[in-house]
Image (cartoon, rainbow, N blue to C red; front, side, top):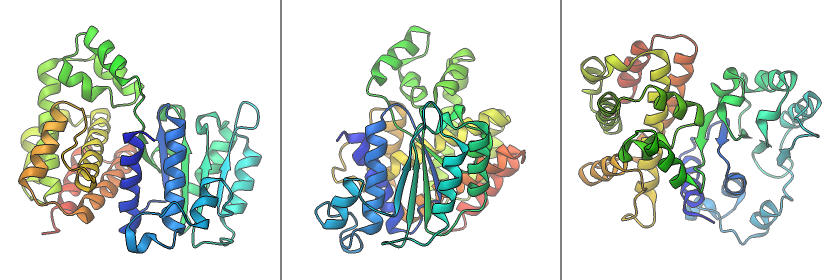
Length: 329
């Protein structure tokens, strides 16, 4: 199991411990074994009798072993029937989801190759995502988020699994004129976003954007009401709809990195993401952060992304974000 998978498992353990596991997630990237391992880890954390005491599944009990072997009745995986996931499969899945759990207190549905859903299947799934059921969690596994309907993407939280060949991607970006520090960050975005950022790349402009977002995140993470001022003073030039959506993805990256470092068993270990890593290290060294607040930051950013995707003014959405997150102290 690689370090990235372990970090995501820790991240989801914290969500479950704080009762903040969302109803829907989209796992993107090429690391299918890692995605599957994280989903199984979520199921084990929800079902294992030892989780409440230890904060993680034991991996050894009969329940954990059955989940690892895909033998747990309340976890269902859908795979493409031929080249696509068909509408009949989604309808059968929906019928299964609304029934009471057989053994546990939850249900988990996994759709592999979710990008292969035909339009009818995707629309059938959308009706379920629009009215989530308590204690039912959906995991969509896809290589690229952009291959799914925007309406589906806006109703699930996206987590990107970095490819093992990320060093090659960073090298390609540098060959296109992107600085090393920026390439390490840009490589973490989806391929569509990477293409857009490289096409419009300006070193000074993107540096100012990243630094403004770093400052904004610092204030959000610590509940500092100055976050509201930063929207006007530093972020306003970057508040087109598309750049706001990219900004939220960047803030989610920062938040995930902060949570993973804050909860890592080896607190001296840091992700290799250049200026972003340096910023997160400084934030953790100088501030006392509450994991419950950071998990709330994550959920609120997701809600803001939904609003902006639904044509709410980016500035207004960010102002509401600052007001909500900076009332906690």
